[in-house]
Image 1 (cartoon, helix red, strand yellow):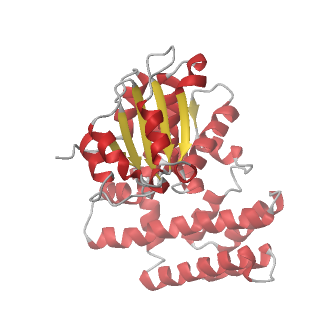
Image 2 (image 1 turned 90 degrees about the horizontal axis):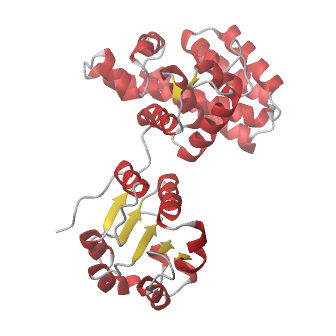
Length: 338
């Protein structure tokens, strides 16, 4: 019977303490987490001077199963173990041979097999790997999970981030963990030694100001203040080094905002509490009333129209029209607010 899949946290803790299994099987779409564990495995399993003779990183489409298995079965050279990593394992020809290896892995090796997506787990060798290897599936996070992930990642780096800052950063990056990690490093550098990262840091590190930023724009749109929304948008475009890229970022953030409002309609229909609704859409309970106030202006038909408007703006900014960024966003705001 297959054992249960492991979590990222469990694997990270084991690797940091030097506790390794002879065979690991990772799969899923969230490659950032897989890549992070791969790097940690190499760092903790082998000293730098041991890696020349004891580390193999192989890409499935460029190898054959016989050669890879020979590497997995090899003994370490002047080291306690050897490490073999096979990326894109699903592309390795004749990888069915790993069914037998899964049943009897080399105890002096740490072998990590990585699939870029979810394979057919009912078929061998994947079935055997689930039964005998330490395995984990890495799924993309939901939007509502991103602020919590950001807070945890910041803590791992030795800092703190307040709830509003985590939400603002999540609005910038969506569910892209690699981008989120890069933005966290940028924030830490910007903070200059301060241990707590704030919402103002998120805005300033993005080249915006407290008065003119996408979050004030989001608030103005939600409140139905067209002149204010237009003034903020114009200032953002003027300050940007790439107006087209800035426009696309604005559309992305506003799309995320309206997605939260759309989810709130379902929450209200279910009679959920304010705290439960905040958790569902991924915001702090302190800010849920602001979203609920905005929702009064956007019944389902208005939300549907808003999504159509945002999609049209995204299409034009990506080359689907000839109008400049200022005109595209002005028309978008007129339709959203009125």
